[in-house]
Length: 104
Image 1 (cartoon, rainbow, N blue to C red):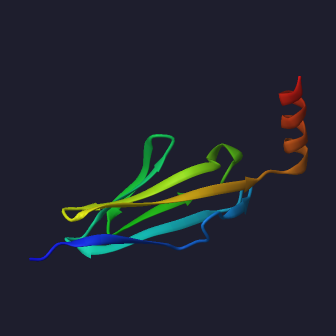
Image 2 (image 1 turned 90 degrees about the horizontal axis):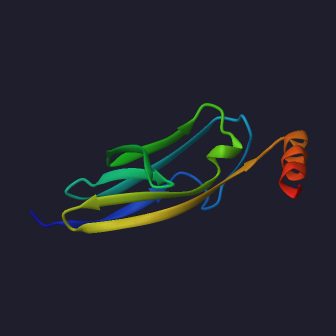
């Protein structure tokens, strides 16, 4: 069998933006031979994993979920990665409160 380096595909824009408390489901799929193992990583922790696909799912996304996420596909031919910056738009009152707390 000939090994084929994995290729990654995301089901969203590179830097998606979501409103706080909205549902989010972002899929990372990969092709390759053998079938690649896939993981979503955020702040050094594996958030989701699978073979050929992994899903980043939030029932209600919060500002704590915002940040850089890494989708990594790995098989015997090699490893490839794609980064995704998840932006969460918080409610105005909460943002204003957080900003005031930050400046003191």
